[in-house]
Structures are given as structure tokens and as C-alpha cells.
Image (cartoon, rainbow, N blue to C red; front, side, top):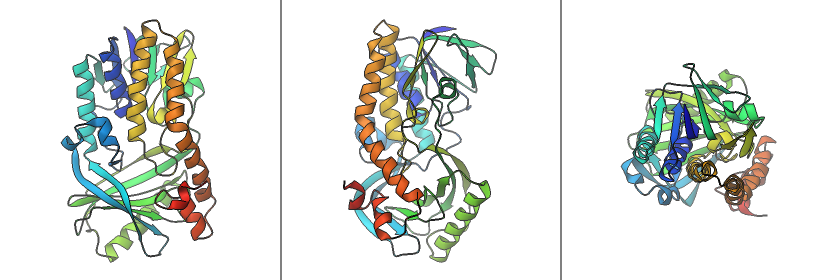
Length: 348
């Protein structure tokens, strides 16, 4: 099957890329290994206030608003930080709406089909035995991107996460973050969503049992404090790139390939936040891919420059601050330099 643009992955990055390319007049086909958009949910579902400006109709999938951020360092008293507002969204509904928008724009979207690889001619090989040939390929297949690996653009540093959904004992409009030495390079969180909350932990790669144990400790701590109920409503997990930009562009034979979202390593290494970067990079890559397919080869280079300008400075700062956390902070000053809620993070 030949198309102007082939999109691998239909998370937010892929869906926004497919929609943007189709709106620009390209013939687009997008594939996704999952059978349904957004399921299973592998996300803490908190998005910053600013992303509302990108989406417009965010209220359609918002479960509740977040008004502040509360940070606890080890067992110390929590510190409230005003101004870190956001939205707890229904991520499955969000992804579904993004795919519906791509289809409405004219993109062909197929689910339950995985990318097995990309051959020496730049053709995308699928799990059903078929092959997709595109003038441009967009890799939106997550932190362990098959396409990125074929290019040698690999997310070498990953944060592994484990999350459960639990009943919330009392309503809250604050997102809670727990900084602990045991969670090397990561943190714990409790993000309220009406009458329930997403409770999770993330850390650099280690034994799966370690994350399970740390999540169990945090759950017990919150149970003793009377903040959550006993029941576990659901469980999920996943990986988040934490090493900064792995790569934005490549080429196999004569086929240019653009990487977006987690496949490109655009998630913030300190917070793990990646939805905003996925949406923005997907939209820009979709427009660039349509331009390249129509004969404007320079559009791919423009995409790289724009992403570097938008995310490069913040990612470089985050990488430096994440290094502080990986080194097991020895005092309050180190902890404060390593987390976005404190002024020290933004200094220097």
C-alpha cells in the first residue's frame, strides 16, 4: 500500500501527526498495535494548564482541575506550591477524540496491527504480513520505538513506572509528589480525579519487584494518613524516556523519517510529562511530512530546528537537574534544585 505519509503509532503524537498531514492534503495511513485508542491507559493523566490552549476543547475529557502542587521530600512535611495548575483528563477519551479528529481530516487509521520493522528500502513491515510504502514515515511508536531502533536513534535512558487507581478518601485539588532517594531518578505521585486518584511510582530501570515494593510502601503511608481507600481499582505501568532528545530525523534509503513524542525522547526527564510535547511535535511533523511528500525537502530540516528551539533549552535544564536526583541528593538544597516546584530549579 502506497501513501504520501505513513504514521506508526496512534497515541497523541501519532494522531495529531496524522490529522495535520491529512489536513495539509497528504494521503495518510496510520497504524496502531493496540486494538482500541488509549487502552490500556499508561499515563498518570495530569496535563498542565498550558496544554488547554493547544487543544481548545479539553473540557470534553477533563475529570477535574488541579490548582496547586504539593511536594514531600522523604518523610518531611509537604510543601505547597501555588501556580502549578492543570487538568486531570480521561486519557482513553482524549486519545479516542484525537484519533476521531485524524479520521475526520481524512487519515486512514488501522488498529490491532503492529510494526515489525522497516526494511532497507524504507518500507514499513506489519504484523499481518502487509507492507506500507510512504514518501515519508512518522515514527510515533513510543519510548521503545521500532523505527527509532532501526535508525540507531534509541532512548537509552528510561524511567519505569507502576501505577494503581485507588478510591480517594476526601476530594482534593492538589497534585501530590513524593521525592525519595529509593526512587532513583524518579518520584511517587498521587493525582486526584474526582472520587479516585492515580497513585504511582517511577524510577530508573531496576527489578520489577522494587517498583512494586515502593508502590506498596507509598500506598501504606497514604492509607495510614487516611487519604485513600483500601481498594485497588486498576493497575498499569509503562516506560518514559528520560535522556532527552534521542533523535528527530533519519533516512532509510530514500525515505525520510521524522520522530515525534516519546519516540524522539521529548518527555521531560524530571517530571515525565510528555503529552504536550507529543501533541506539538506530532502536529509539526505532520505538516512537515505533507510538505516533504509534495516536494519540499527542506521542511524536514525546518521541523528539526523548530523542535530544538521549542524544547531544547528546557530539556537540557531538565537533564542537568535529573542528574542531581540520580546522584541521591544529600540535603535540602539538592532536592530543591532537582524539582520544578522550587525556585532553585529555575536558577542558573
